[in-house]
Image 1 (cartoon, each protein chain N blue to C red):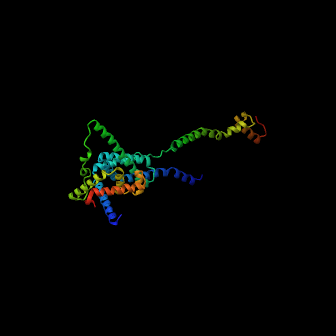
Image 2 (tube, rainbow over the protein chains, first blue to last red; image 1 turned 90 degrees about the vertical axis):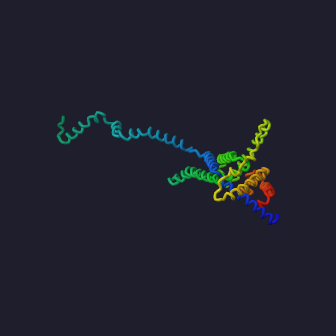
Image 3 (cartoon, rainbow over the protein chains, first blue to last red; image 1 turned 120 degrees about the vertical axis):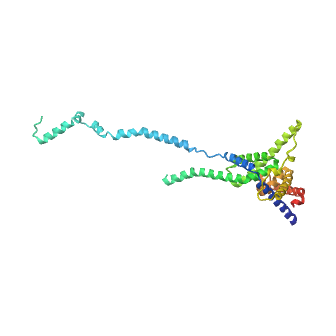
Length: 118
Length: 202
């Protein structure tokens, strides 16, 4: 292709592009509005990633809560009545513990007196 | 797993997903906003009807978003125009069938070409005198008419290369053909248009 021919072709293409760009700039407001609505409608079709971990996390939290609630009372049963357990495991009679106040007085009386108790 | 490791693992698996989606959505919106007006005019030259062209552009935008939103943004222009050109071709096929049916029933309408008013369809240019506007409109009307009358492949190659500014490779993707075919169609289109439009466009 001759140089002049190539330049003429380039000039033609540039003029065509210029005329096209001007027609684009001259689009009316109604068409631009419809384009905008069409674009928004298209963007609404974007698939967003689902939060699959949310249901699993909820289920795990529920299981954890249930375990804590079931195990909670056992802690009180074991910790609180330690003295009662000692009484039950003791070789002494339960009657002794029930009359502990009497036997305490008896010990004191024996130490202070001459054994004349009763 | 240490506390730092745990925080890193959470931040890697959860936060970027939402941020990446939002970033991609913004890129896609920007691309569509950039391309939509030129796409409308290109489709309009192809079908000679603005309402139909608006529908075709919207369909192309929806298909791009649904099928190719995860692709790299550099791939969007040829993909978008491939969808749009397919839509224009389908539109012509449907019109062909419709016209044949209408002729058969003796209800064929006059073609839209004689009623099409480019000045009314592309009004309100900014900053130009009425004479300039008229000259540009007439020039563009001549150009549109000549481009519309090109064979389909030549028309596609010329509009994508000249009006949209796609390179040969992207035009080949958009047209679904080889780069050599694009060069051939484009060259023939330019020669045909120059011959038809004459000295005023040289």
